[in-house]
Length: 127
Image 1 (cartoon, rainbow, N blue to C red):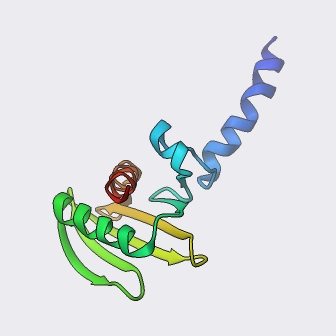
Image 2 (image 1 turned 90 degrees about the vertical axis):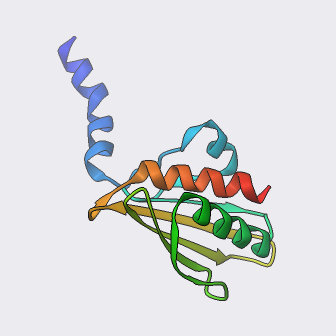
């Protein structure tokens, strides 16, 4: 009986220590295709037009914190929110598809909760 429990738990332990296992973020983001790609970053692909998505990024960043720098043409924004450094990146994959990547670190430690929250709020704002 104990052997079966150990065999069952091994895959979960391996995923836990690897730190790079994809993770579906909440039910709202799951529908949007968002997933964690590292301990501090959430990303997802969307068919929302680039301009609309960029405006949502700027709006949410202003609401949640202070924008430190932004570059529309490169699709990069840095901000401070909840004592964390936040980086948002928009990457045009095709003419109709854009990748949204949000990362957050607080005192040099990953803050995945904030990255998830910002990702969801940006996607909701862009709709």
